[in-house]
Image (cartoon, rainbow, N blue to C red):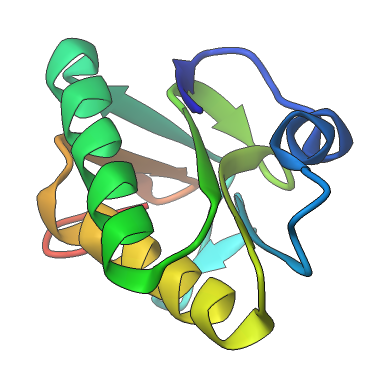
Length: 137
């Protein structure tokens, strides 16, 4: 399950869509907007995405992780647009037979998204707006 959206998401609903009887582990990561970054207050962030390419790359990452780690299913949801402090940004959920491979797959998916997917973040602060370079949301 891949979703790139402006809309907020429900962690519970995503987990219910992912869950199956064969899963012994559901590992999740939910990224949220924090109120500070690099010593500066953050009012909100703006996330831009090349949506078509991002969807394609997220699906490739999902498929590779399932094959590499032997997990059953992976859901990736990533938001874009203007997000306020405490808003959800991203969710990765991995369902597998056992926790070690589910945790490993979740971390690998997160790090691979940060490296490869065309998503950009601008922090809106009282001191001005700053594009975050060399780091993904």
